[in-house]
Length: 411
Image (cartoon, rainbow, N blue to C red; front, side, top):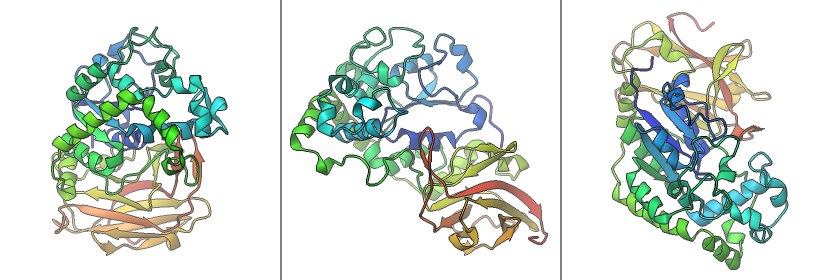
């Protein structure tokens, strides 16, 4: 597949702690690697040189919505979260991860009550979703300031004060809104509206680890009241978000959306060698962004047990799709992984520590049930290593290559 000329452009304004890392991963898998803008934060973003942004089709990062004026032709996407839950999630992250914020040392080891007693921490919590939509940049180049510092209450040199009225106006102008509490439904709507490939299973990323952090049920009523008080505008905004979300309900059909999404980048429905380049958009679910190993693009699956690839492609007698997989350390994929193709089990063969899966294609045998070939990977080993990087990743197995072969033996 090759990117078409004059692709539509999309701007995902990622409000912190709204499931945005999951959404970024999902969105980036819809685009060719060179179409995704590499800037993810205000720091070093070339706002004063908007011409530098022309090659990109996807902009996704911690940018307040006012950045949309630098991208006037881009479709806008914003997700919102119930304000009390979002604030608790933020406090958990603040105390857990030293990379997330310069105030980590002030929050580490403290209770919710102690953090809410700290005026500097509270300054980072106040009505952030309203500030995200209802503030405007006063300068064209932020420089080295982070998105957290940008939203602090003493940042009047960079932003206008948050305005609920402006935030509500902006809300109605957004091309798409989603709700974190209804993530699967929201992503289905997102695919339907913009022709993206729908996830059979949505890979969650950067979640608070189990048995770590504060739970709403364990927080005192007085602290909940304090959180609500510092999010009084966000509570009003979120009610308006929910009302709009309910108005825009439409039925969703997974099979139909898969076929629609494939036509977005491969309208002639043909098989070509470049469609198997793992740097390209991934027509499936539960895959991380491409990495390079020895100069070759590869992709990890994870964190969910179920991964998929869906292809509504024509078939040719005597040809096979061949997948090569590699296990993570200590895992035996012959025991932990099963693969199904259009509901039928596929054979796995071990060759030089790699696992090969060979899938026959029969002429005109596009799946008679769904209208596309579906490959399902069921990985049964639940003990995932957590990779501490810019976010938390749970890795299952490595997809090394997908290619077309003529009829030969597996070995």
